[in-house]
Image 1 (spheres, helix red, strand yellow):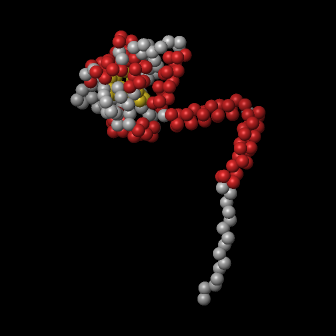
Image 2 (cartoon, one colour):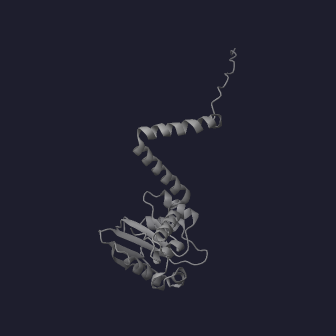
Image 3 (cartoon, rainbow, N blue to C red):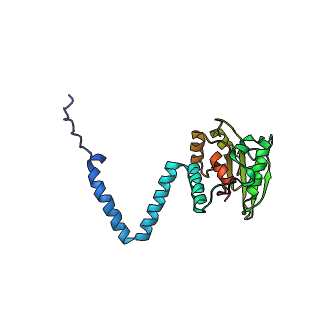
Length: 215
């Protein structure tokens, strides 16, 4: 006959909300003590943590746009299109002309030696190949879109599959006149080496003298 085993009373584990007010006191006190003992390392860790949280919340593409805008404001000048190149004009170009316009824009970067348009039926994801003065090669994929058409996750995967092994480049950029789908951004964030994504507003900033994505 089976013997009766009294049910064990489950121990109640402390929940986070039970320790809520304790954490409010413990964490600041611990940080204060650590900062007094090791001020420089603690500040470095906090800065890196803050940068990581901002990158996770904002995303690389939006963060690039924000930095570009801040750089223009810090320079005390407004963004003015160089050679009359506006976002509307980029969108009105023929795709081949757009690729040549991006190559011309890349060559205005002081760090760039030459930029060669490569687009064609068998370009394997490379529309422009940029040769930097320091020896690096950067691939640019150009997407001249209008309306609601955006760069997709498949486009990101295609470029990611060719820029290193086939084109022997050190970095890759996708430039579009519209934007990127959410899945495209998510896919890019999962890559070991994310691509540099330049949407329409950031392209306009680049053409107006803002930061180049080739640096």
